[in-house]
Image 1 (cartoon, rainbow, N blue to C red):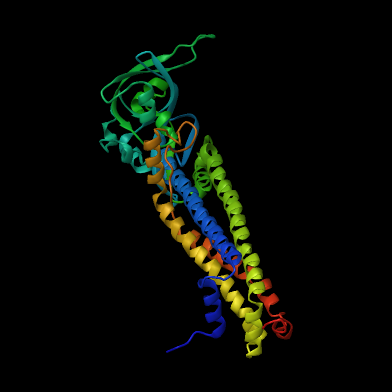
Image 2: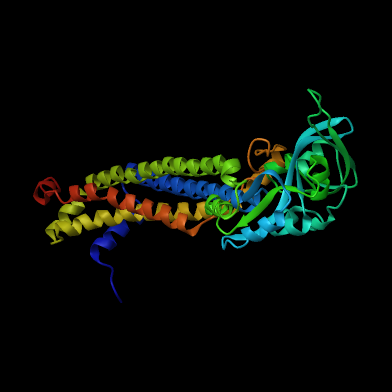
Length: 412
């Protein structure tokens, strides 16, 4: 049977066996608890930040244009533009659109909104809107039909089958304003869980052409790109291949600040929690200094029996590393469980307390998302164990300076 090396055996024994000195045991537990708390919190926070990033990429940017080609004049040749855009290998799909801003009126309630005129067959290829429709069919948008966001419908007391009036201000002769008015039937209500539920409605592009005065022309074409982070470059490449009179827009203009805020928050919160882990890891220093002081007679005996200074140093490095390892693994386990269940936990708290922590009026989504990455777990655990190991160096080195003769002189 293979025996453990003596330094490892002693370090393991000092870590797991109850200490005679209660202060040493207490500080050792505090060190473990600090590491557990720091590691667990950091894994949860990084998962939540990853969740917001994922929601931005897959949900919000699946509903709003990732990139678009616009014209200074109504675009009556959009099919040619679409054909030219699809020649770019980074463009996956193209659909025409016309955006209208106006007011929705129902039962005396008025809400400002962005009405998106779409061609249903084409829109399905560039948008994920169908995932959030109760009928999962965008082709229900026909002449005089409208699909509307859930929060907007709630504010206007609308339901499927209701009629709603859209009012679009339009400049008339002189200083007069001649609004265009059209009634629509609500054929479906989408719930995406994002801020768009409050501000977005969709109609057929033919109705948008009548209201805008574009006729058969459109405002622009929307692009679905292969790489979101290259959307601006992809759109610019498409415009470069077109005649003069076209310009590009991309999601970084409308939601780039949100993406940067998420990334900045992730870095700052991660840094703060890493500092907490560092403080907890370096509590190992005080723990080991007390252990060395408490075990001076043991050290003197081991040295007398022939254990080398490096062996003594290894004993306490093993003990400190084990403290860090146990705290880190416990924190990782707690963090993984919480990260996987944090969304359900928040929903449960909202139902119990009858409050909603996240509102789409303030936050980009109305729920707390979480996306656990194995790379984050490995990074957090690796840094925590490394800090714990480095924290053992000085106390372990100080143990090698214990003089056996001086210690044993006073032993009975």
